[in-house]
Length: 292
Image (cartoon, rainbow, N blue to C red; front, side, top):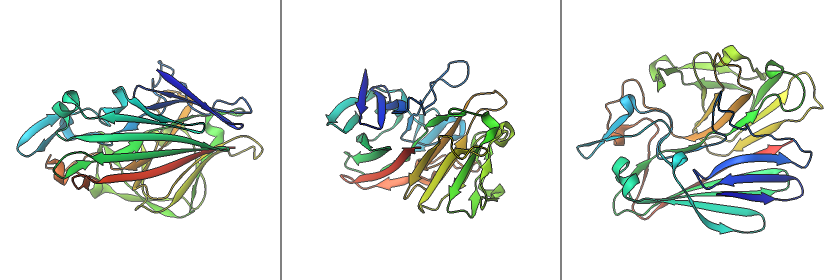
């Protein structure tokens, strides 16, 4: 089922499958969100839970038992229920059940709330540990934005990361983190977008939970439209598009977690970027998408 939410500046559509954002359209008529063309990437903006990225061999171990789970977890493929809807917000919830517990042995609730505030879409992610034991999880988002938005070509666009500084970068090796090969990326100036930028998979920035804003704009036309994503506490930011396919999108992905390290021992409690949540506790975070 698809839900629509609108104000004077934005109209968004949210699918109950995965609580996935399917459309972000401005009053100017511009569709900012990638429209999931099946010849390239058939998703728009999936929610990532209870892992971010890939597990080594798509498996992990918890309390002596082995479990299997695909990349980015299962939430993006599951049916959420409507929890609450107001004039300017909609909240969807995923509750653990027998299907989720076959992959992930914890009782939980995952709430995804979308709120419109003028030209900004606020996305709130809340994880509730409904279990009687500590829960281990990661959570994140994977929104893809159309490039170009109106004028120019894919390579005319750039990503301006604020603050403009040097960031630690986490490289990927066969979809796994390779911390030993970590390096730095100089983002004192905007990062030009090109197909080869993504030759080695996603560009992953280690944000160290510091506030960051990333602006996607046309480098050659300051009057053109753009979009920005702001986060106050994301641990990592993934920047991704397909290579070598000529897909016309760029993902800006705030993550509270990351793929397994190449040297992982496979234990969930040791997983790179894993978060622990006490019984009965909740984890809450937010990121904002603003259109220009």
